[in-house]
Length: 259
Image (cartoon, rainbow, N blue to C red):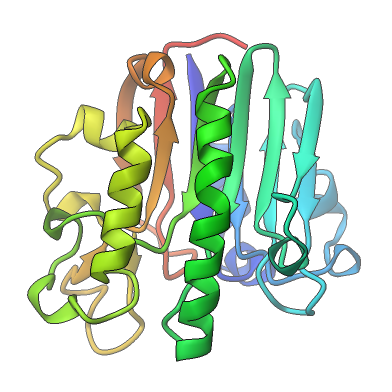
């Protein structure tokens, strides 16, 4: 069984202060995809550079305290790739790919557009640039899973208050159309394969405003999109909410797949 966990940390050092590492050590994960490190290489202590039992890859943003992704694996990757070949976004540390035999695992942090109209335009640029990357991966003949914070709730079933959020970043019609287009090329949402009804247990992000976490007024922004053969191997999928390491929650999926 292959266990993959994905989590937007909203700061790796902050998440560690909230107990992330002891929790992770108990999960038996084979691969861990992390987003929003908010740290440079020099900011990471030995435990985070070389966590026990893991080989680590990090793509740091050039801007301090911003973005960044990580990919930790029990097995040393056969190869790895950083970035999507776009200088604007590669400088923000948003994409890491590791290959293990015929399997490719990707840690992705798609931009958020909620902070300003300028960042929403940047998000649209990334989406336009990333769609061909997804098409190329899908056509590669490899087993691929893209794990991460997609910053898009795909349908009305993926957030609590969908009616009032139709003009907000993360649930704009253009964003939903884009992710639907990605899925139409053959990608499968591994969580939804196992939980087609979705429901309130699917949420992975909650605003820090008001009582969103306490009342479970959430969004499903974190998912694992897999090629069909790999998605068909998914056996269990769960969002962990017993502890809070971030404004996101870890998503764990087990695949009947050996690497």
